[in-house]
Image 1: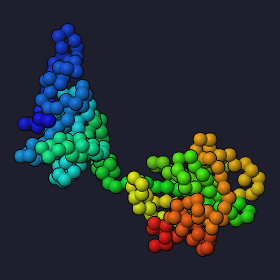
Image 2: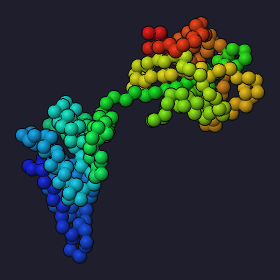
Image 3: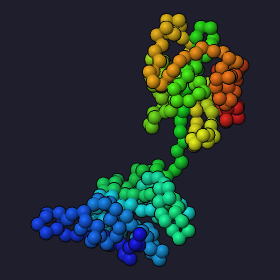
Length: 279
């Protein structure tokens, strides 16, 4: 990829007989690297001030009709990353082996601005930083018991461990609302959940990043409510009412520790756990 000698983007004039430049002309005449007919990718020369260069290059690109300006950044290039944040480039992810060097291919970070991004004031800064700062998955489950004090566990179609009703909390959804939604989806019951019985930090596992899990008090189901359970077709294979001791062979070691603790302690306030143990 050729580095720009100056922050100048030139899009071709109209093709002969055409009101707008065609994709081929735009690629041939671009003063930078034109990824497609609406996206320009810039590189900052080593000798340039990265903040000034990116501001000028992005402004010229948008003035020339581009809808999107991209920047690829080496993960170790902290100065350029910070410059991209200051100018308003949004972090969009990591391109695995996205750049070829003399030493071989390596990962790069993809940043971009699009025409119309609102970058003014505190909201603009938050918009940029929200994409950069770490995010942690939130999981929410519910302990639902029957009148015999047994716990409801679900056998799901996509893994061997049985689970409490619940699942991943959606973006902008509270943990309680997420758990109530999952309970409705999985067993067909509308439940108003109580306070969290425990909150557990989970380390990275089987390709997943770390997560925080909320386990809510799902209350006691009466016989007519148990009879009204309808399992989500294709996702939930079967439902089982078990004691914590009976659950041990069917759940993960971490889940077994938590279920045993809940049965033995019957908490009335929220407990904090890490890796399935009180912390």
